[in-house]
Image 1 (cartoon, rainbow, N blue to C red):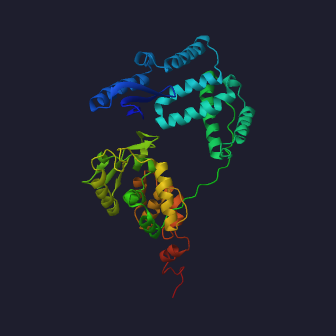
Image 2: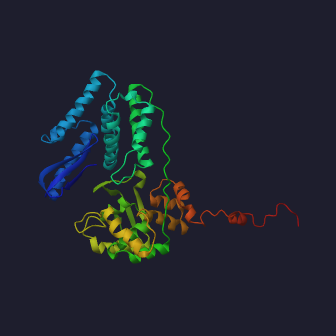
Image 3: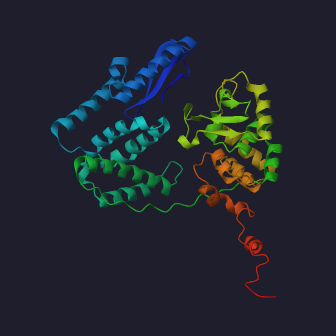
Length: 392
C-alpha cells in the first residue's frame, strides 16, 4: 500500500509506492493541505488498482521521471524472453518474479525481498541460465555468504544466510514449474541459535517503571500489559481506541517510517484493556488527544523505536539495576503474567494475535510453574482415595 507524505526539506507532497519490486518516490508540486492529500489519495488508489490489474504504465503518470527508462528496459527484457520462447537467465527471471509477487507483499517485505535479490542473488548468479543452477552452485553461494564481513567485522548470521537460500529456492522452484526443469534439491538449513525469551517479573516491571523517564511511563505500561508488538503500539492511532468497550483495535503498524498492514491477518485483533492500560491511555489522551497517533512526538509522528530503545529503554534498565533485554521482552512479559494469573490460554492467544495456544505452552510454560507442573501433584490429586482394588 502506497503512502502520501512530505519529504524532509520540501513543503510539497510526495507519492511513495512500490512497482515491480522497486520503491518509487515521486515529488509533486502540491502543498501539504487536506484537499491535496485527498486528491493524491484518489490518484494513489487508481495507480494501485492498475498495478493490480497489470495495466499500469509508469510514463502515463510520471513522464519526466528517471524511473521511466528503467521500467521500459525491464518491460523490453520480459518481451524479449517471451518472444524468443527461450529460457531466461537468472537475472531476467528474478526481476519478473519480483514484479509478479510484489502485489501480495507488504511494502517493507517487498523491500526486504528486493534487497536479497538485488544485493546477493543477482550479482552471484547473474547471467547463468536459470535451469543450469545446480546444488553445487548453491552450496558454493552459501559458502561465499559465510565469508562476507560487515563494516563492524562481524559475519552474516546463520538466519540471514538461510533467508537468502530460501528466497533463491522460491525463485528456482517457480522457474522450474514454468520452464519444465527439475529444481535442485533443497539444502538443509544452517543451525541457528535458539532465541530465548527473557520476560520480567511483576516486581521487575514495577522497578523499571519507577526508573523510566516519566514522559514514557504510560507508553511502557501499555507495552507491558497489552502484549502489543513495537510496530503495533508505535502506529496506534486514537481512532482505534474503543473507549466504550475498553478495547484497543490493532489494525495498522508503523514500519520504516510509514503506515502498513499488520504482520499478518491473525495480528488484526481486539485487545481488552486491563485497568492499568485503560488509565495509562486516559492520561495519554490528555497529552496527545489532539494528535493522530496515541504516542506521538511534538511533530505528531510516531516514536522512532530505535531512538526510544537507545535513549529510554536501556538507560531505564540500567538505572533500575535490571539486566539488559530487548524491548520485545515486554510482549513476552505480558504473556507470562497473564498465564501466571490463570487467564484462559485461548483468550491470551487471541489477545497476542496467535492463531492457536500451541506457542503459549511451548514458549512460556516454563516461566509459570503452576501452569504445567511436572512434579506429580496433579496425578496425586486425581488418584486420591484410589486403593488399587485392595479390600479393607
